[in-house]
Amino acid sequence: MKNEILKLSSEDLLGLGLKAVSAAVLHGPAIVLSPRRSAESLEALRAGADKAEKDFQKGISALPKLRVAFKLARVAARAQLTASRDVLKKRCGSQHCQAWNAAGWKVSLAIPRSLNGMLSTLSSLEQYFKDNPDHEVEKMGATSAESKAAFDALDGAKTAVGNQEVANKKLHAARDQAFESLRKGLRGLCHELNELIGDADARWKAFGLNAPGEPHTPPAPAEVTVENDIPGQLVVMCAAVPFADHYRVFTQPAGSNAEPQPAGSSGEPVFVIEGLAAGTSWKIFVSAVNSVGVEGPRSQPVATSVLAAEAA
Image (cartoon, rainbow, N blue to C red; front, top):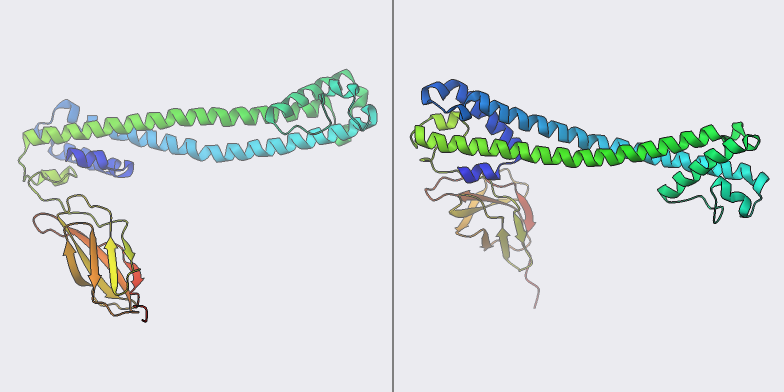
């Protein structure tokens, strides 16, 4: 049971926590759960994990919008640099020379591609137009104020993305810590219930847990594949299933609504089907069976066909 909790997804863990809280309210006083496993304590852990998950998802969803704003700020900054350069060509010349240095173009008249290069040139332009107000052309946006606005928007957008990335790392760590606390609390609850109620007590189910005395029903097999490269054979495989003692394989003719028929079983998650007519099409299902014969649900069907033998 402890290992089951370790394997649960965040969503399933929150669901289990909710059941445990409800059961602790209903049965806790009679069972005499310790204060650490009370409904209040379990709810604090569950609510903390739920909030941490929502905060993390909110942070994740915020980042794409900030990146779009950053991209737009770069486009606007490039437009501002281009307009200013074109205006200043009438003052400084169409070829690079020393006169361009004060405006931020110290090597060539190319628009900087790097973020730092763009910010540096915008900063120089702001000061250049302050020092040379008669060089400004307001209708072209080639002004000290426009250069500063482009700088502030680009620098602010860059900072916003960086801050959110840092925040998301912290939110991720906080979420992991909150869920680990919830896992520990639920594992502790399992341990305590082992001491307080019997292995077959029906109250295990109320807490969302399998009673230790009950056999575990295997889940539906996943990652089912069928290889049909050998004429007359289908090789069926799936991922290993928890609590499985053996596996059953079923076939259903393609396009048929008939009940899938058993093709055989195997102690390993691999099985070879033989005897199917060449050229026929099928749907293949797999189920897992535990050590006392309890069979879990079938897998999703996999469509395939039987390869015909090559003519001699």
